Image (tube, rainbow, N blue to C red):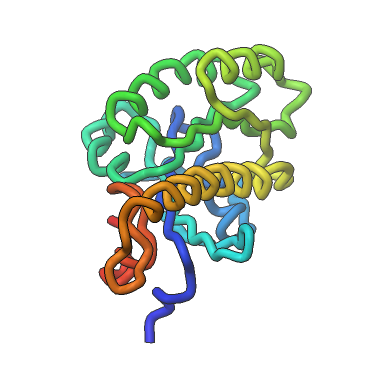
Amino acid sequence: MADNSNYDYLFKVVLIGDSGVGKSNLLSRFTRNEFNLDSKSTIGVEFATRSINVDGKTLKAQIWDTAGQERYRAITAAYYRGAVGALLVYDISKQATFANVTRWLKELRDHADSNIVIMLVGNKSDLKHLRAVSTEEAKNFSTENGLSFIETSALDASNVESAFQTILTDIYRIVSAKSLEQNSEVKAPEGNTIPLGPSVDSNAAKQGGGCC
């Protein structure tokens, strides 16, 4: 029997940012605790899953990764559909990848749900000797745009766990508050959790076996 019943919530989280900033390695480090120094650019889309526990609930994260190259921009609509969280990744050693964060954020605002939870991630923090983007500069950008912020290293695994745990917990808190509001107004059919909009897969949606 499939393990579809082994989680309480399924959250789709997307990784966005320029090619080469380490999105695929953040994904593999969090979901499989692996890092590939020779990883090639992602072609198209791939995703992996991992579950965590928050407040006694099992949250299953379905994390999507795609290439940052312009030629794959045509997939954006399907890529963002249903996402409740996004990690906007740049490379702390390459100023251009941080400069492009503004464009990625606009794309996210244009294509994703308006309530999506966004975290700015400065990856490759192990390259301190090559740092081109100061922590302060990134923090200021995050504050101005209402984003959470963290610096990570997929190479040495620092803060990778924390980044995903934080964004998934933030999503869960928002969904839980929304659920309490809706439950006070509407009775869920057959005791199932009320679907909380198009981007959250809860018990009612699990019957279909996935969110996408």
